[in-house]
Length: 552
Picture 1 (cartoon, rainbow, N blue to C red):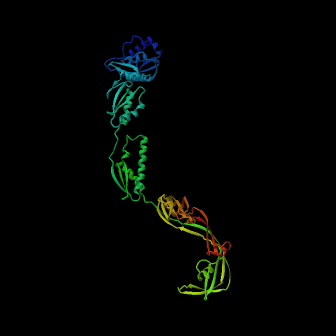
Picture 2: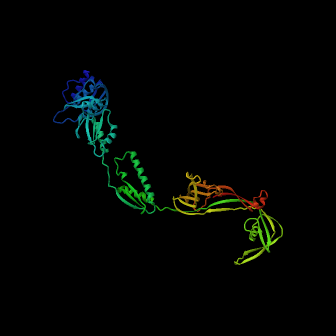
Picture 3: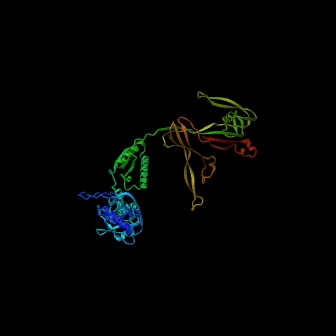
């Protein structure tokens, strides 16, 4: 140990130009090696010695030895006790000045958990960093020079942001033994840490403690729209602004922003179809650019629709029609059957029969027939009929289509159009018996639209194609519901379809295909005679109509 210190002293004296009595060459094999940057004959005429640089390496050397070496190198006084211990290894092939060597020394101490505090004017004490605050750190004013790893205390003013917000941002960069707190009334930050770390904190604080750069205050603007609807367009613009506000909050950028988005307000004026915009000039320009792109004249779409029922009605009739014709004072009189009891009734029976067989008996009579000629005058003829006849007929008819509605709709692109044709039918929604009178029933009536409803929303796409969102509904009152009691109300039927199709311009598309099948029964009979069992069928007529429809 003594030989190593002698080596260190000899080399330092040689470096400073002092008279060198001896140099122990064996010290070159010690773990501590110090090389002088320029070993040359020293001449101390009247020239100033240039700044010296040294290169040194420490291989597993205890900390007190390093402290003693730095003390001899820098001429500084250090105070430490037995708690300062441990070994360090330093490999520094780069030549360093004395000040740079001292900075490296303080970094080594900080790495081992120690710090340097000034003790008076000519000494420094080395203590564990955990005890730096209790031992009393040096309070430094702005502009005072300090050692990088010296534990100091600074009071930092905060001007444009809140001190509490700044602390939350700066805490992650504090050292393990550092301390930071806020003084609310003065909006200041108290920080105790190494001088090097405090310099980092100050640099970051300067960047975040910036005034908001409001370029100009918001002003009121009125923008008149030419084609778009002010109410609908204001909703779109408000949605864009709301999304931008949300994105700014997620980025945490509400404290430092050029123009706060909360200052932008957009209100529609329906009377003039205008937008009242409250925004700074730089934001107003961006909003106007968006409005110009959206305020376009929309293309028109003309739709010709036809709602039809393709129907196959199988009408089957089976029955008999009975008539008796007598002569009274030379004039024929018709008795029996149903309908008019005159000569015209006989004419209608005979002239309207198809698929018909007739049987008759009795005296044949000439029945006069009156008709209207093409010139408006009346003409007459006679028809010979049997005195007693029974008509048996069986027939079947076919119907092709039934056009329910043929609307023509002109609407704007992406604008829904609706056509409703029908009637408002009353329904019993609830019934309540009057407690005072058991025979009195109070009913609540609601009305429901019954008829044809067609909704179309066109969208023009590329290539002269049109997308159509179609909703079609046909509702009606069921015929047999007329016999239902009033307390229940009528029954309605409903057929609806909802679809989306793409059609080329001027082309036709057929949708749906809703089938419906029902039988309608009607009976016409001679009073009293038609009610006689079995033989009553000779005096009544029954029709069964089977309808099968396809809604297109």
